[in-house]
Image 1 (cartoon, one colour):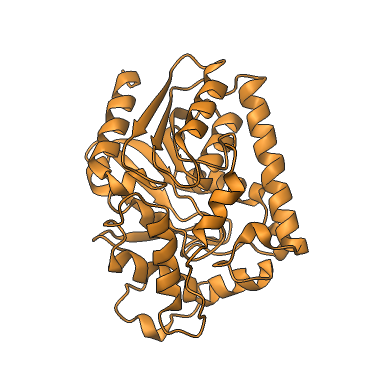
Image 2 (image 1 turned 180 degrees about the vertical axis):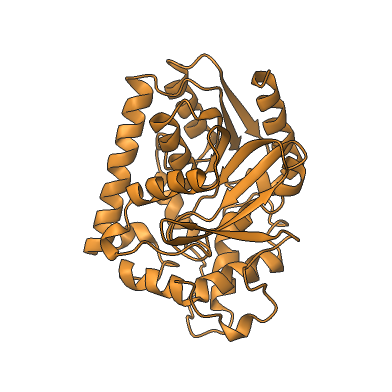
Amino acid sequence: MTGRRPSEYDDVNDDASIGGLTAEFADVDGVRTRYYAEGSGDPLVLLHGGTWSGFASANTWARNVERLAERFRVIAPDRLGNGMTDNPASAEAFVFDSEVTHMESFLETLGVESYHLCGQSRGGGLAARLAVRSPESVDTLTIVNSATLAPEAAGYERRRERLHAGKPDDPDSATYLEDTFRHFEETLSYSAGHVTDEYVRAGAYMRRRSKAMETAAVLGSDPTEPYWQRETPETDRWHRSLRESMWETNRRIVVDGALTMPTLLYWGSDDPTMPLRSGTALYDMIAQHAPDVRLYAANNAGHHPYREHPTDFEDAVRTFVGTFDQ
């Protein structure tokens, strides 16, 4: 299920790769999965955030891959149903456990047995789920601004609503997808210089492909709208699956002390959706049982601090991993 190429995006690479990176594809239990792989050191798996759509993809890590690859074998996949990776096989499979199973199978397909793991936003929730299910495989864990995993701070829904204030409202506009993607990326940022035309065009291209259109049809709405406001059987199933999985993950962390590996929380202190106090609450939750937990607050950075301050993020990850990789 590769989807047709939208003709109006002739300036975008067929595989939607950006930043001079070369995308690869793997067959993961019949799911065509796009990923970036660079470097030859210890595996470092980067899991992007976002939810079922073409907009969300491993392209978010494009500013970080090259330098991290000087130290690691960097592997950055598009999650199931995101970016250029195929959708689940059925409408009923649009659940969080499908993402977990797909990612475990993806790593098995690539022959990755032990690795450093980093996830941002929803990818942080996925990373934590993988870590509590297979702690022996995860050497270190890095979580970046994850509302999926961190305890919610007061006013969360109000902050999420602000993301949609001023959102482009003309779906018939020739640049609607680009304008919408740019709006969200810039609104989530402290400084928007990282939101380049190349990045935006590739995101819009992936969102315009037939695969992403199928995603919108399954979920019963346009994913540029607030997904948490949709009320369909499909979205109810998805939200329930996410809540149940995160509840079980948090239980494993708090009750069982399942996150025993060194853990770094790298947090953009100016995230308009997940303030720093959510990061400190997550730190307190994990630190009850885990002896090696660090919280790094990145000043003047929003929801994507690794994009706004790539060198700072890369240095933090390399230093953190180096501390425990003896």
